[in-house]
Image (cartoon, rainbow, N blue to C red; front, side, top):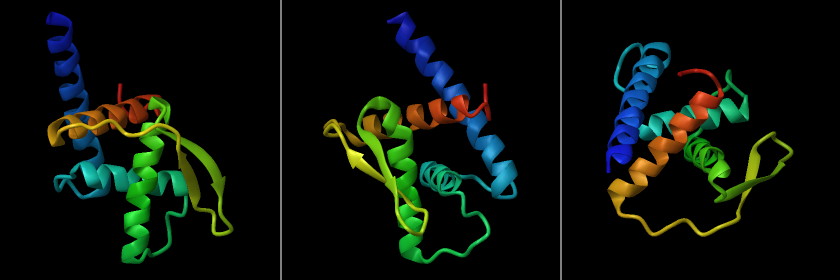
Length: 122
């Protein structure tokens, strides 16, 4: 049990650090939520920073974020870039049936892993 507790605490600490850094850098210190972090990942992966996006584009950016952070877990695989430069992913394994809290924990863990690999947090 001890390992789980310390692992959970490390994830919690890293998640809070990530939120603080992203909020300071991208939302003028206003709190940012999981969806906002996924949006930023999608934007980063798309790489089209200086354009305006429509509402549908924003949903697609969050989807790119989800696919990107869950790819290392084996749920998605990058497939191709379309003519507009948008990445497309293929679902490679069914997403697990998780309760809402467990889904949130998986996404937070995947986001922390993503930003650790990008060396944005440590």
